[in-house]
Length: 444
Figure (cartoon, rainbow, N blue to C red):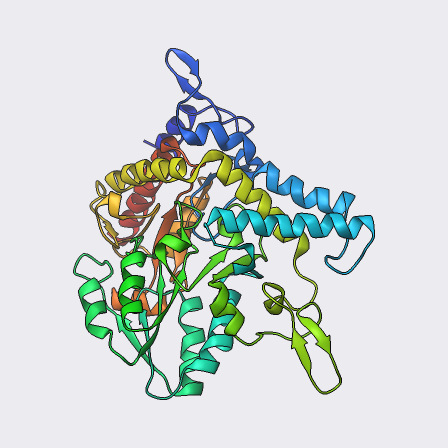
């Protein structure tokens, strides 16, 4: 069988054109599918393009999600109809821009069940949100002898800021290890907590292991010791219902571009009184109440932490993304992605050369799988798959310490979202198998 023939046969089992993949071709004819993906794919224009002459199979949503028409239109509509700065003008365009900008904040607050929209701070991304907490709260509250608990699976964005703060304050970093199943070791976490613990900052869903960490239980235990809790929710908010009041975290950092929103926008949730007690992170326009030559007073939340002209269009676009996800339903998205993940893991474990990282039970995993294939370098594997129109990630996924811990220089990663289909997974598995066979023939 020639290379690509199995893949081509699978592609023919989907709707044959890149322009319309919302129907499935069967022997008995064309039928409307029942899956969530097939009802939403028409909303995502990029999913209808071809790569190297093949329909795009996008399995890199863990890095960034694709954007629906609603988000693209929101950006275009702002620039075409009411482009203006917010909060600073009394003319019509400024009023419309301000209403849309603050309206998006209200949507985000409701989406994560914040008690008030004042608890939502716009940031460029989750990295900036974590740095805001590190430099505003961390430098003001941590001192020598204090302890910060992280885990070995943290993204660099939830590691480097705390390294810098620890160097400046003398605080000590401690790290939760993994269980033999490559999951969060809750027992080890319990053993690390003590009266010196001032902060616990933990990822909700590992972008490499795919494990879903018990953040509600993590927060409850930390609070017993008087510690504050920050949750990195970049890989959870786009994929499952999130309730910050139920979790009872003190802060939550989220990136907009992973939840069908634009790049360059994210947000920090923070408890109202806690955020009011924190000093400003950046100084300049918009974040002030009164300014004198020698001193200034600061605006109330959320504006105290939003210095300068913000990412107005991007915030409005994120509001449109929240509307889009809300209309589908996060429970529905999570249920469908759990089904997809089960299917992906079942297919991957059938390939003897593949080693999957993280817990192997699909119901304990988020919608991604990082893996290696023997001696095949993940970058080579990704390049081969790209020739079949398949986009996956390859590298350390900004988790270098974790990769050292699991003794892998790098991994390949397939990450799913609700617009992916089982048929796409079949194409991916067939191409992966052929790529492995190709490299085996070279190595043998």
